[in-house]
Amino acid sequence: MAQRRKRVLIVDGYNVLRSGYRYRNITSPDYTHDAFNRARELLINDVTLFSGKEYRAVIVFDGYGNDYSTGEPTKVGGVEIVFSPKGQSADKVIEKYAHDARERGCEVMVVTSDATIQDTVFGGNVDRMSAAGFCHEMELYHKDVQQEEHPKASRKNTLQDRIDGDTLAKLIALRDGK
Image 1 (cartoon, rainbow, N blue to C red):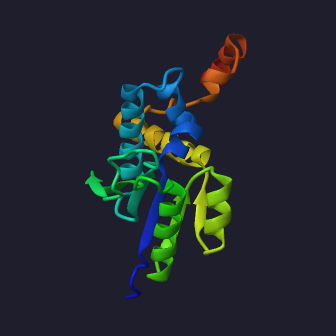
Image 2: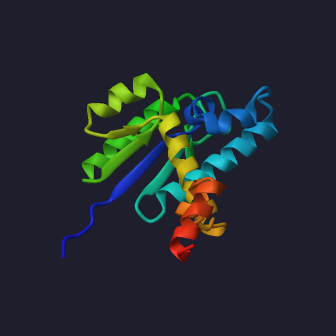
């Protein structure tokens, strides 16, 4: 049996929060600490669901100007969360993760709408999904889950339902031999 290739999902955290329509309504119109925390939490949950058992998932947030950001990853729900170290952009961290994963022979998917990252990682034979594409995938996932939890019975559409009453009466009379 062929061994399954390892897959890595790298998400450009703040880019997806700002560009992805699924998250913008949480942070808009105010960009308070609580709003960003709620949006980050939703993104982490979505990445956990999307990655499942198929991907090793990493979300990279920009910690460039944060004096306390060391770049040390933490795990939440099986997803690695990284704030770039002070003085380094999330873009550089994403590029390094993508490059290192490709060097290890992994398939890599980067979720971002940042043109600079797209240009850089495409050179390394890395797949890309836009923030809008990721939001769309998550909406489809949640619709599927909702349909599984609350299935709608399909209604049988018969000829009787589609014809007017006079025609139906005539057909019944013909059938019954009247």
